[in-house]
Length: 347
Image (cartoon, rainbow, N blue to C red; front, side, top):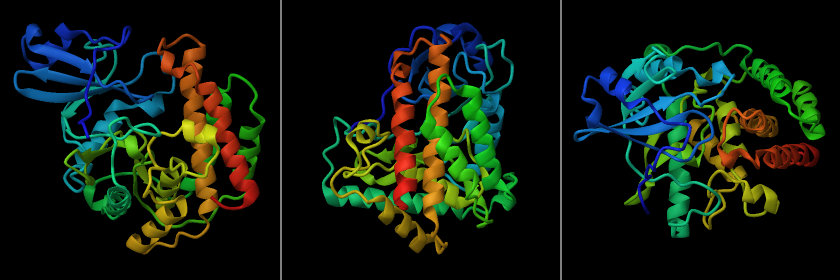
């Protein structure tokens, strides 16, 4: 299994190396930049200077959803989280001056390792027992995050009424990002609004926990060495985080279109099912995990909106990234999965 590797920077997403070097206090010809090619939201670059490696995070070009790409907020979260949850990257500098590279950004230490992406990674030959061990590690890592004393760490949020605000907020985002009518999305918005559960506790949550935001040890794939992409992290209902993980968890028996759209290899032989994922979380955390259908359907609904927000940037010509051209179909596929789950009454 190979470590995650950067590539040449995509056209139109280059950084001003002279200004970046000046910010870093080094000579312009001493800075070398590549880009991590995956990911659909904030842009991530590898910055080398001398024998040091940093990762730079900045908002995507053309985004109008400011709240989803607040670099200062993300960096402040990591600054407070890393000491109590070392799997979160360590921030080394923050820049709010948009004259440097055209947007706010921050630099963090690189977390080296492998990231499993897509439904069937080309270099993955994991035996079923190793896959199961990895699933176990993914769940235990999420439980560990939810066990962080967020008040003592200075992490902030408004857990009261969190679930209702999320349903209402992501419904508004759907209407703001819509480029065409998708009846299944409207159906799910109504279904969720009618079934908002009561308060179930509070924890610091990642809000986008999935395979391609987790770094694993290439020599021991069952060992998680880092968790990335904290742009949506906050204090809220931990079952929303678990629901999001389940929403990304495509199973072998799921429809082929959904499997083709999977964000990670969650149906490799030996993988947990969604039910096993949820059950194991409940066992390790001691939390009541009943009523997970709502949280699973909300996760799919939220994923639909995120995909649509990215797709809208492509439709409006605000990005030339051709990876986004097929996301309109992804919206329909994921929305249908949510409607089907609600109709059958289980996830």
